[in-house]
Each structure stands twice: as structure tokens, then as C-alpha cells.
Length: 205
Image 1 (cartoon, rainbow, N blue to C red):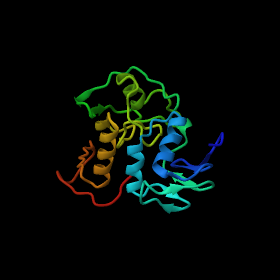
Image 2 (cartoon, one colour):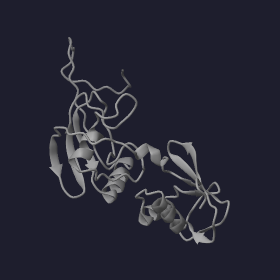
Image 3 (tube, rainbow, N blue to C red):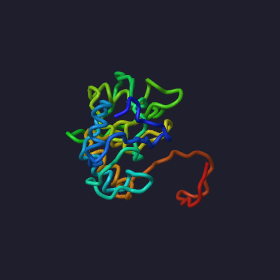
Image 4 (cartoon, helix red, strand yellow):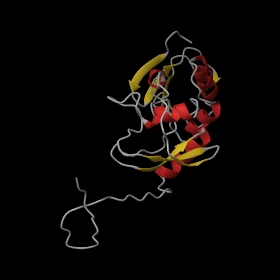
């Protein structure tokens, strides 16, 4: 491949220009990410192809056996690799409610940001999780949110599920997307309330 076949599209997509061809697209992408030292497996690539997340010359790839040729353009839903580097593990007192080989359930406290963002680089839940798990968090989307399949706002406390394996990450993400996970929120209110019960069916600030 060329020295830099990577072009930045946006925060969710990278574009690879093929400079050698007649090779299956799943094998090509697997080799590419091995060369880039990114841990993206061929199985994950094949799953993303089955979900039609990978585009070849602007069209969804439907089979992993499709061949690529010189000057083909592959759009891949992974941010550029610089976004995953230098997330600092930081020791934190994490309240772990449940843990097994695939996931954690964390009681996230108030005033804790979930993942690194502008103004919060080394004081987030992800920093604490990386320390607790010795850096072993799945990151198939190659971003600043390893292990994170859903989030809570900084000012919201409560239980969060964190994936410890790529398989769990993908399954939990799919379950949440398909609304197979139920979430209940509690809020404290104060003031002179006319009713002991009320139902709010409109957005509020």
C-alpha cells in the first residue's frame, strides 16, 4: 500500500484508497488494520459488511468475498486512529455493582464525565476503567469511548453497563439500539406540588 492511504472524512468514517487489488475486501481491510496496529479483527469486519456499514465506491458491500482493485474507494465507519491514542489510565474509586468476563455494571456518581471530551481528558469514567482493567477495554469503533455502550450525563448518577469484550460490546450496543434494554430514571423535585403524582408527556428543560 501507499505510505498514507488514509483520508479523513468525518469523525465516524475513514476512506481507504486501494493501491493493489484482486483481493477480498475483508482480507484487504484486515491486513490494512494489522499494518496500522489497530486491533480490528476480520470477524468484526465481516460483521460490519453483513450490516452494510462498509461502502465500496459509494455502495454498501454485501459480501466479504467482494474483490477490490486499484483506485477503489472504501468508506469504513471507524474514526482515524489518532483518536484512540494517549487515553491516560487514572486510578479511581469505582463502585462496581456486578462484574463477569464480559461486562461491568458501574454506579456512576454525580459530577463524573463518562468519556474524554473537550475540557475533560484525564478525569472521566473511561480513564478510571482503563486503570481498573489494565487497558483491556474493547474499542471496535476506534474512538474515545472504549467499552461504553451507553452514557449518563455528567450531572446524572446511576447504573451503567460497560462492555469488557468486543462480543459483549456489539451485542449490548445492538440491544440498546433495538430498545431491548429498559432504563428507569428517578428525579428529585421540590416546591409546592399540587398533586402527589403527575405524568409529564412533554419535553422540559
